[in-house]
Length: 232
Image (cartoon, rainbow, N blue to C red):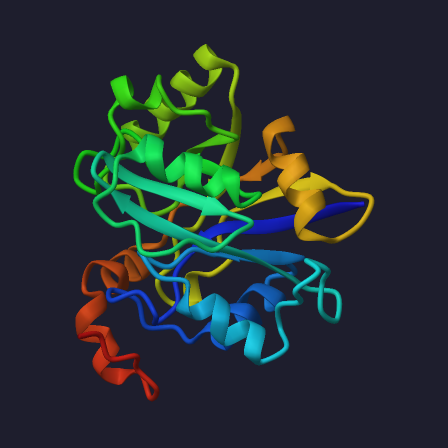
């Protein structure tokens, strides 16, 4: 059965986002998704929050037909790196190859997001060449310039890497606008992690102008979040 996922989004546990974990889940459900990956910047607090709320199961199975994949977007010394299927200790500033190894040791996989986006800490090609990637994010709905997605797609083809498309949503209104779908025998974290390197069906949509403005002025919009997470 085909299941669509948004593999890159942020909750208000990221300092530049303002949607609560529950709001991101509900928005994805309204768009008809089977699940999301929670990938906050340098923290797994939202994963812990959702686990306590009973929305993430320890055995990696879906809850009421919806799957939340634990993850984190680490700001490595070389750029941003998505680690899916696991949680990590604080690794901000560590080399990307070290972060990738830590994720794999914990049973996770790694995806390089917006790799050519020089305005948003994309990992440069000479580092990408060294990384054992499960896939490359070839379509990021919030990319700074659209040509960066085209370059990512070309690199994925050159290396024979699977491609993913994701929203990089920082607000619930953008969650699930862009997805990757996989044919799965069961809706579980293990099944998705196994499917990602094989490739899926991408739905590629750029953020509308209004959503781009929300993202670019994320900290201002956090003032209107009724339950903001205060960062020290």
